[in-house]
Length: 308
Image (cartoon, rainbow, N blue to C red; front, side, top):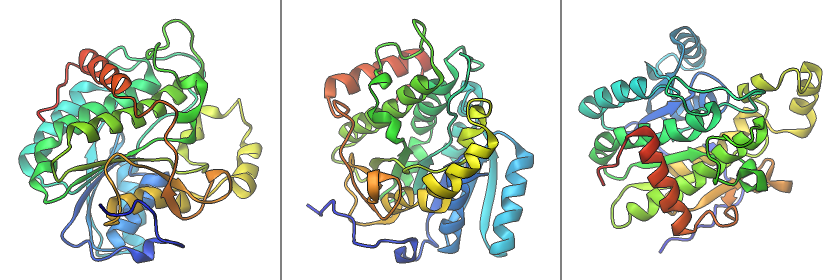
């Protein structure tokens, strides 16, 4: 069995030729998703950028092609808070694409008041977890066409917080913006653990990562809680950059050493930045009973099943 140890001083320069790979990146128009797309296209991959706004996707394509005029890019308008949008997109891609790398990256964070998706789910968990659960299920045919596809789901350090317990998944009893975020990020890890168990014996791998601490568009809901000036200070002093924050996702998507079901994050102080490495799972996240409960509840809520 290959080691799960990440190489010392790993950087994206170690990534090899990706000209035969197709990657789909949700939230690919900004932040970590945009940086991941930049690196993937630089190494030759064809990248499908998925996001809610065609205008913002077009801006992202222009940004990437200014750096790499020959970058192979396509855009997909996708709303992870809408099951109909997910079903339409995944059905179309399942029939037409072979997807080697799926980056479940998009998300929302710290929504001040409880809001719901178009399907009535609490917005943060509905987008960050249920949306990606449904998308991954719908894209299984496209992933299985690849020789050894990978599903990379971006969690966060918040997955380790006690407020992230999954017993009140929709925050019906009590709502807090950051506790809903913690729930969604724990759900990302628990989902990945369960998916990895269910994929045992196949070539498809499922891995979760946390990016450390980086100021990205996730913080757009925090304005008013954190001033723009404070966010600027955090960006420059306390938090990493989107460029470095993309490293764990890029590492697990491309390294031959990565093991399905493992959890990766930055190796730096307090896991805020640095070269990717295996990190400790949130307590209990690898419990098969919790994985089965979340899986069953996710199927019940979305009406989506995995053809495994």
